[in-house]
Image 1 (tube, rainbow, N blue to C red):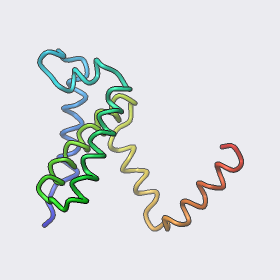
Image 2: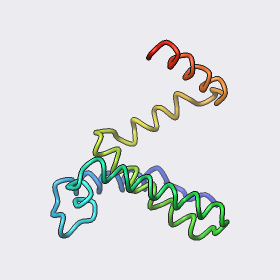
Image 3: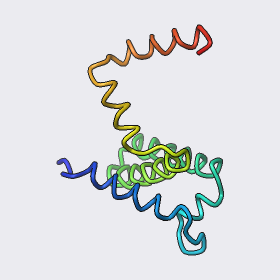
Length: 116
């Protein structure tokens, strides 16, 4: 079953995240993350990614859904911290449509060989 309007939910979440950037860290977890800086935000993304992997391996669907939501939230905080928007990421995904992952990796390998 697919949730209709998933993109809109993410856009609303991102708007909320941005609105909390300068909020009170004592009242907002998001403001607290921004206040702690990029390293802490990135650390949280890593922690949540590991939790997603663990729940996937355990095949605990409900926990995988919860941890995936946590990962997406923290990833969006990281995007906001880096002054990216979901639209930036959606555009990159759209650019990749129809491109084989194998071909994309080969191009990436060529770029790293020439120092770019």
